[in-house]
Amino acid sequence: MTDSPLSSLGAKVVVASSSDENHPPENIIDGNTNTFWMSTGMFPQEFIIRFAEPTNLSSLTVDSYNVKHLKVEKNMSQNASQFEFVTEKDCEHTEGHLQSNSVSLNGGSAVHLRFIITTGHDHFVSVHRVGVQH
Amino acid sequence: MVKLRARCLLVGDAAVGKSALSHVFHSDGTLFQKNYSMTTGVELLLKCVNIPETNDSVELYIIDSAGKETLVEACEKMWGEPSLLCLVFDLTSEQSFANCSRWMERVRAHSRGLHVPGVLVGNKSDLSPRREVEASVAQEWAQSQGLEYHETSAREMENCDAPLLSLARAFQSLYRERQEAIQNLSPG
Ligand SMILES: Nc1nc2c(ncn2[C@@H]2O[C@H](COP(=O)(O)OP(=O)(O)O)[C@@H](O)[C@H]2O)c(=O)[nH]1
Ligand SMILES: [Mg+2]
Image (cartoon, rainbow over the protein chains, first blue to last red):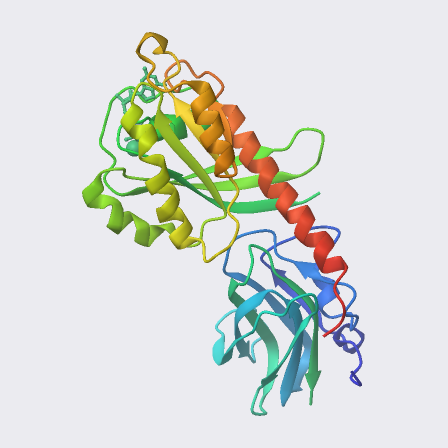
C-alpha cells in the first residue's frame, strides 16, 4: 500500500493479450485497485511490464480477480523476449473481493516482468494492480 | 469496443453435419463442402462474428471434433476449457437427438463447473419429409439444458448464421455481466 504506482516510476505495460478500451492494461500499473485490466476470453493470458531501467526487486503484490494460476518470468534485456522463469503460484478463489497475492522474487533485477495467467476460476479474469517492493 | 475470444466446441453424433456447418460458418455462406469425409480428429476453425448494433465482436475458435465413438476420447483431450458449446443433431435422426444428453454430460465434465453458454442445432432442415424430431420437442429439451435452439440446413445454407450470432451474443452478455460484478468488488 505504501509503494508509489509503477507508472510514476516510468514503468509501462508493453504487451497485453487482451484489450478492452474501457479497461486498458495501464490500469495494472496506476497503483489504483479500482481500475483494472480485464481478459476478454480464453487462456492463457499474459502481460509484460517494462521498467525504465534495470530494477531491483524483492517481491511483488498482485491484486486480481478469478486468477487461478500465475507464472512470473523476467529478463534483463531491452527486448521483451527470452524470459527466464521466476516463480509460479496457485491463487485461491475469493468471492466478492479481490485476490491479493504476494510473489517473492528472491532479489535480483529485471527490465521486463512477464505475467502469464495460465488458467482462471472463471471465463474472465481481471488484474487491478501490480506493485513492487525493492 | 471490445474483441472477445471464445473456444467453441462443436459436438454431436457422426454425420449430423458438424463439418458441413462449420464450413458454411467459415465461408460466410458461400461454400458447402459436398464431399463427405469422416472427420478423423479435431479441426480448428476461426470465425469472427460482429455483434450488430454494437462495436463488439467475438472471435470464435471453433473446434470440430469427430463424432465416432472410437475417436471421442482422443478428441476430448483437445477440447481444453470450452467457453461456448454448439451441439448439433440431425433432424432426420431420432437417435442423434437422443444422444445429445450424453454429449452434454461429456462437455460438462470439461467445463470445471463453469457455466458454458450454448446452442442446440437441429441440422438438415431441407429434408423435411424425413424429419423425425419435432421442433417443439427439441426446443423444450434445449430450454431444459439452458441452450438456445436453432434449425439449419448446411446444404441450403439456411439459417446457419443464427446459431453463431446467438453464441456470440451469449458470450458478450456473460462478459458484460462479469465486468459489472468486478466493478462492484471490494478491495482485498
Ligand atoms: N441434406 C442435407 N445433408 C447434409 C446437411 N449437412 C450435412 N449434410 C450431409 O451429411 C453428411 C455428414 O456431414 P458431415 O458434415 O461430415 O457430418 P459430421 O460427421 O457431423 O461432421 C454429408 O454427406 C453431408 O453432405 C444438410 O443440412 N442437409
Ligand atoms: Mg465432421
